[in-house]
Image 1 (cartoon, one colour):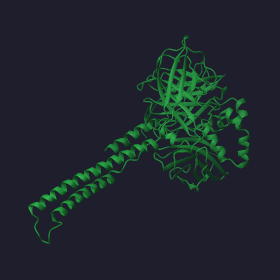
Image 2 (spheres, helix red, strand yellow):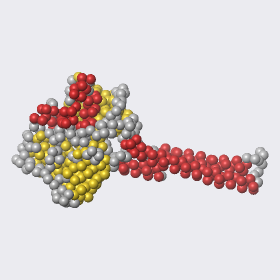
Image 3 (cartoon, helix red, strand yellow):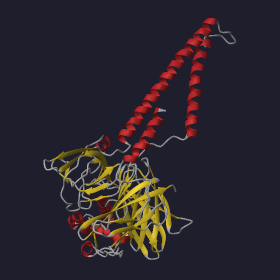
Image 4 (cartoon, one colour):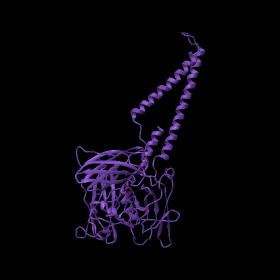
Length: 521
């Protein structure tokens, strides 16, 4: 029973692990040669385990799709096994479904090869894999094992009693009172021994479960937070990543250093709770001692939830979570890529609106495709309109992307940071795309790696439907983006969510705030 309670506890704790807190599935939209694909990967909850892969063909005529998993830890590159063919869906020939084995925790890439009427194409998708919970034992098997244990225990006690009572008697002799007394004593002693053995086995089981939790079940590193207030009323936030046993165990095999994602080693999101009416997207700078600090903008007093996104050198993304109580703070205007927004307090009873007013007088319109259902992949499309409700034509890349979006469930059990290409960090995507390139492409990528890092994924804007007209990073910097930006995603749980959608216009980051209800599929 204690082991069962531990398994339930681990399942509950798993909601607060890894990047995209409570949202482990991977969504990616991109091109495989002449074909455009929407790929969904459901990583296994326990490792080793089976990942479910679904591919939707959004353009082109495809005859076959195969996939192969490759382990990437930042030091030693794994070799792909034989590719597995995906099976087309009976109900929709544009859907392909399959599965692959993931044998270790860490960074993986799923290599997709497509064949069809327009030729062939390839695509690589980063997939973080980690054990989230222990798998419960089937009730039928548990009942069988308990029955066998009782049968064996009773049998051992009965055999010990019979041996003591009748072991020294001649055939057909009747046990005396002394023999029967010896039999009862032997049964009592054997019963004590059996109980002791069962208790020892239960203790061993609990030790093994605790060891499994510590070494196998993923836990995000603790995030230390401190806030200092200057005499002028401004504030500085310090964040320190601590180590835990899960990461220490893998330190020798993984590349644990951080790599920039969109030009920043850390993206910190501050959300005032429980109102969810103040939201900040900030970028602390790393100090010589490894900590991250930033000068805060003006903050209203309250309790803030902190979500800090990082990407390891292997491409493994993580979200560190903490909280802090902040007083009223003074601060200057936002600079660089930092942004923030004030909104009405969140209420699950309030009526959802598909229009958000922006600070520059324009507005953002959400065009839902119908009722949202948990576990159902949809494109969330948002259009920016000017004061007279005409689509704008002057959106700019925001940290190399057509837009960014952050989705938060009302109970904070889900936090997802998305881009038009999906839920994968661009830093992770660049690693697997580089690995999947040809030898000539690898040399070209290495030559331009400095430029790519500084632009923080700019080349990946072409993978989102809102910016498909961009053919190169340099052209993307000069071109204006379309008025619409979209994000492929599947909400992991039913419930109420607040959506923060960020675009850049005329050098200023604008954030649209929407509320959504997600029903049961």
